[in-house]
Length: 338
Image 1 (cartoon, rainbow, N blue to C red):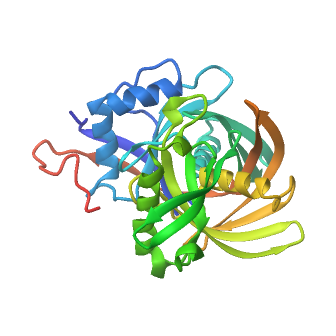
Image 2 (image 1 turned 60 degrees about the horizontal axis):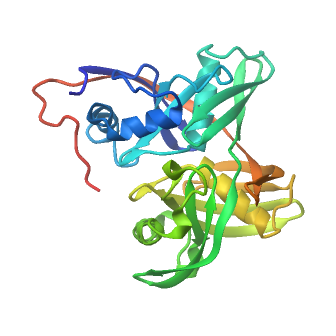
């Protein structure tokens, strides 16, 4: 049964919404955030709350948000379960950036008037940091320090309705297939969006049950989360410029340059030798917003080379809501048109 009222605070990061539920109205038990995610997936009540906040008429097919939960231990300020129209995701960079801004703006984490503070957050894929920068009492930027990220597989053939393509699979807190939009005669522009969504779904589901979608140590992180389409916009010394759109879940479109997807892209570019440590990627979105990103260092994870990524962006509060569920309303939790 869906509660009669649900309070949220909404942000956007690079145009991508993030709906924060500070006090989830239903219990979500578990000893860790990863356990709570597994429980939430199986709990009809939690799924009902997620659906009512994502689906129309209170949300839309591209809505995104998170339930705040306790962290795994005292080493983090908070935990979060990320959600979208189809379920619960394992990572979210744009949401982490929004939570960093929210934590400082609400006083949950004390910050200097001018300077930086780390907001440490437990997410299903591990512990991440939102490094919040302030100037004269105003948040001006947030660095998202992601989990170790690496290339899973290269040159993987996938057959689509427009022909065969070869993709690179990479992990950045979630597992993505990534490829140039030009490989199928497209570009990362609104005019091509319908085709990018349809083909992105084809690629995701073609790979989702293959060996390339397997996380090496935690099966809860297994599965292709999305397809990242890329346009290359040029290189200069120490800088790369690319545009992307990430089609995730089942056809949901990220309006931002995608935080965890950018981590995966950093891993690909570093493995290709195109982005050495300290070089900067300018990553634009399909709506023209921008993240900047860099490889902080390289590490070894279970015998495989990986990188520690940093993605920088900004989030802005868009509103606060007290959603009401009339007991006689037939459209609870709601509906989706795609």
